[in-house]
Image (tube, rainbow, N blue to C red; front, side):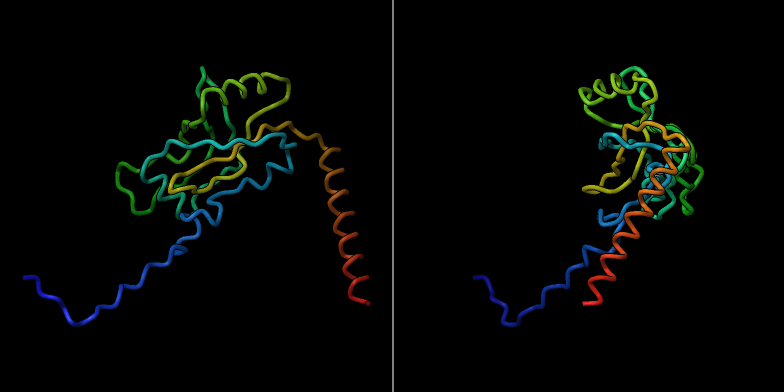
Length: 176
């Protein structure tokens, strides 16, 4: 006959799911802020990234940089070039090369669409942000067209005018 226990045990406190905001997907691992300044971002796509273990650990530690990176299509495959992921500080001799070419994972139908669009004059693939989704590293790529100097000035003027208008509305609201 089974013996019943008379004392009750407390359930162990659960670990906080928000322990690491980058790994849980609440904060981006890397953002290419200069992309929207230098390019018109026309359309955005999500792609998976083929990484080694030390690269994932470096990304979790915030050592990824997308500033000079770009996407390239070679023979129905998508590649990420010039993305810098710093070496993992606790890595050994099998640590990764910081600027290696990394394969991007997308459905072949989406890649075929991108092939047609990137063959147009002046369009390129620029990584905008890197983040975690369901424990996997994802990359947001944008189909982009380069800005000329006057385009950058116009964007800056528009941004300044919008900011001044918002401030004027806020001041008007505060006076009432």
